[in-house]
Image (cartoon, rainbow, N blue to C red; front, side, top):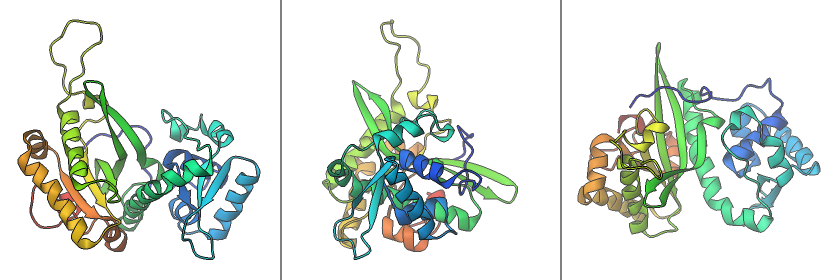
Length: 303
């Protein structure tokens, strides 16, 4: 699946010419919540934890960020960081966040409710980012946009956990890929997870009509306003036994086989599912993705 570039060019890692404090603020505005270790891997993969900690503590003293301690953390007290209202105001006009409103979290209670799912999404992003660096591809901190919402008609919307932008660099050829990413922590029923495929099928077919006007000739699917090619749909599963995760993948495959709208989507769009721990251990470019149309596991680019 190829497409043209949109927005800021993809980068495997941010330029170190920009102050690290500014990059930390931008990363928290983009990704909502991240641990010190995740921010280091995202922004300074060759740097030390101490450098990030000093920057974060200074930003906290200035009232720009705050943190919550992860439950069950070791004696090292793993902290998850997020923007305060003051920090969000500072990031409002950053070029890398153009069109993305800052996302302040107003209390440690609010942070604790969002932390598990948000950190799992950051883990998925880092698996792709570290694979990209290793392979010479392009996928950086600003190429993963969380919580992207699109209308699917009848007053309803689909909210993707993330939209991923990824550039494969093969010799002198560059291939631009996009994917909707759904991160599943096994907190909802398997049936509710599979219903997400119906929502993507509705997005694939949805054609918006001008408000207050008579119905006009179709101008094409609404998603063409944002994507030259409909993104892949990738499910990343975690927080359950291997047997339970396999059952959830089977239910996703059953939805593709049994629902006519989803079957039509699958004929045009690449659909796959993988276990988060496999992405972290082996890398997304390995044969760890189960095609939802059936077949043997393969890399996500070959679904």
